[in-house]
Length: 104
Image (cartoon, rainbow, N blue to C red; front, side, top):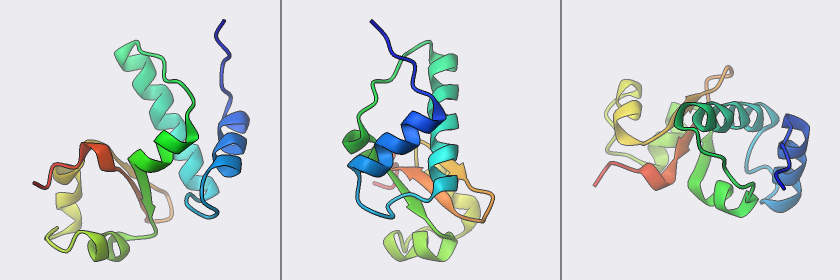
């Protein structure tokens, strides 16, 4: 049996099972859309595991905050080359896929 995960359920599960304020509401919406898009393009269904998602993705408020963790990133344009997935948020923030880290 497969249970479709709606945006509402995804947000609720992530908020209930991850560190408080780890992801903004806009970040969770963008991450949900990215995961759904990935499922469609790869014809693969994700299992909803909030802990794995929280360990795989990190939200940064802006480029400067990301650069604090990754000081070797020379410019904002380089972010897409450094990570497997980069989600640009409407407010200027980013969500990056830590498991796809290409910096080494």
